[in-house]
Image 1 (spheres, rainbow, N blue to C red):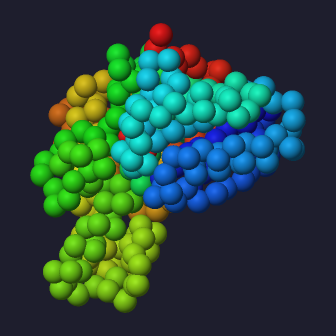
Image 2 (cartoon, rainbow, N blue to C red; image 1 turned 120 degrees about the vertical axis):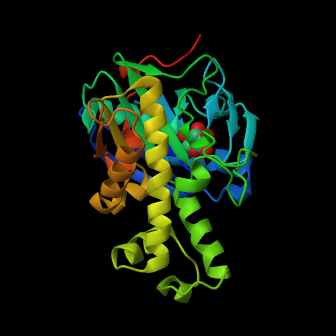
Amino acid sequence: MGIGIDLGGTAIKGGLVNTQGQVLEERTKLTESHRGYQAILEDLVELINDLLEISPNETIVGIGIPGILSGDCGTIVSSPNLHWKNVALKKDLEVRLTQKVLLVNDATAACIAEASFGSIFKKANAMMITLGTGIGGGLILGHKIITGAHGVATEVGHMVMGENFYNCGCGKNGCLETFASATALVRYCDMRLKQGISSTLAKEKILNAKIIMDEAKAGDVLALEAVDRLAKYLGMAISNISDLVDPEIYAIGGGLAYAGDFLLDKIRTATMKYLTYPDFAVPEIVLAQLKNEAGIIGAANLSHYIITRK
Ligand code: BGC
């Protein structure tokens, strides 16, 4: 068994995971990132202790974090959506717990889970893209997880795709995650509604990505425009990634992937439009299988892959 935690922009999820990748117990808290680092740190400790009460002999806790890590994987150097810079999470947790804490990027954790138990099982060259509050990436090349010289490899959410009407949490303008994340979908529809476009979305007090996806499926013109725009930018990004590292398969995960084939078909169509070699180098694009639990499962199974850069 192992303890895996997925520290996301919206929720902190933790679980006890067995060696077959099944989550046996799960606990969730809302992240509410505006509360700042100390409050979230204490919530993490509480959630881990809750899981330890059920399984007291655990010696390692794996945590997926939505940002990039220092070379020794101890410090979160930057997390655009939690608005953290240089926080020593590993040390801060280890003084409060008796377990050893291993940190990993959240999308890399999801990638490890899908490669160990899910949609990209045993694939040699595969890319995981998570579509949630932000956009994360995990890459396997030659059966190895790639994190790069500074840990920023596969930060696909921050590839610049063109100018956009709002800035990314990282401070730049034009990042993929401002075009194609759950946040981007909501921001785009809000912006278009303010321009006075007529849409069934106008009746909603607070928009969220699920409502927009559902309305797009029902044929609302604005919701469809927003989802098509999102798919277009993902297609561009996938074609760019293919030009660079040529994965045989892409797994699309994160909250937006719950839209299923409706979204996947649009992403596939957009990708075909932008691929450089659509006649012979077409990657498979599939839905991730482990859904919301991928981050937990991957974080609990870090020993399957060597991720430290030192
Ligand atoms: C961060 C990534 C993270 C992704 C998903 C991005 O903004 O830079 O490190 O994987 O969000 O949480």
